[in-house]
Length: 118
Image (tube, rainbow, N blue to C red; front, side):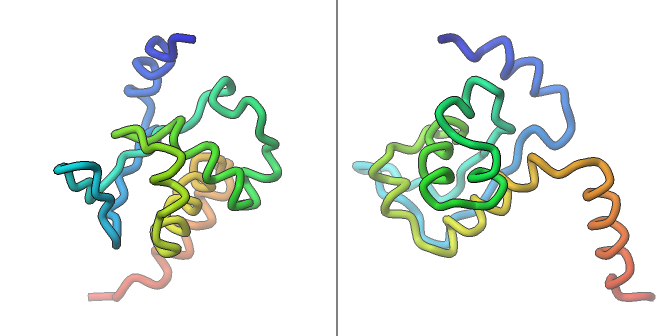
């Protein structure tokens, strides 16, 4: 299955990509992966998963989805070896892709309320 057309269409949508700096870099041969970019999943990339598991941050769902939406693509083994803090950040980023407009507005209002006033 070729995801390229969907990926190109998503490239123009705000919030379709998020980059995460890993607390514990992944060593792949001589290459060190210290950050990954996650793209908002398409329906096809969610195949075999339930939305409630993905949105509820079920670990097995995060581990199954991450290789499908990460750049560079992580292997299943690399995902299984992720530091728990990195897994948590990946899960939070994935959850963010599913936020409704209303949820985003509430989050932005809460963040604005807690910003230091100068």
